[in-house]
Image (cartoon, rainbow, N blue to C red; front, top):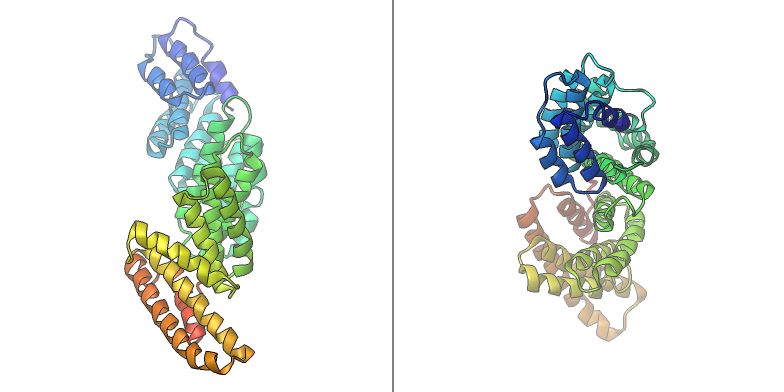
Length: 374
């Protein structure tokens, strides 16, 4: 569809509007979106400019605003482009940009109406329509099924000179879907996993590796919050290793992923989890303060792992010396778990998914039942 819009801009070489449009597309193709926006802003319509040229100019401005992450501006410009193109062959093309901008704003009901007027065979329009379908779906399996075509459609849409920009717009809309009406953790996880899959389909040439690691971290954290610890553990270990490679082993972003892996290991009662979580807790205490939510979670995870280590040793049949020491050690760890959980609750709130999950784990080792966060 962008080809039609670019062609419309080649019709009247004497027009400053057309000249600006041609130059803006060249800037955008070269990756300089700021220059593209400035060039379009400087363009002026000439007497006799055809409606499709005016519509193409407005649509280009909307596209560039969307690609710059300015969804509200893009929606306003796209609405103007759609109005200008209403009686031209560009009506369907401008509708696509308008629908994409509405999706990036999380206005999926409005996007559904606009996208209904786009070309049915267009991969980009089909991608946004999958998000519209997922936005009204209920249940994680239904959301996941609705989003299943999204990775392939995004990869098909992100081609040509503007591929990196189209890829970014697709991912921004996915993030908007995650933020709009996805309060249920299981559904949020389905969206997060669709984003990870879409990033993989787009490939490292089109997406920022650091933002992809952020997407993976969100999916991993949601899996843990839902109690799917085996799946969370596999992804957490890979996240930590990839972060160390990308950012360096001592970077705070690597530390965050090591922290999540240690918390998950504690939840799974893995050997060595207490020491790993305690080391990270000390780093967080030093950098963030003892009352921070992350430090509280790390200290609580270390304490949880210690309680489980004590229980495991008692069950294995301790010697007389351990029989005297283990109860006191376990009691101290249980108190530390309660303090860490209290710090998390103060920082995040009692209903935060990570607080709910750790509270459930604390009840398990206290002999109560865990909470279901789903």
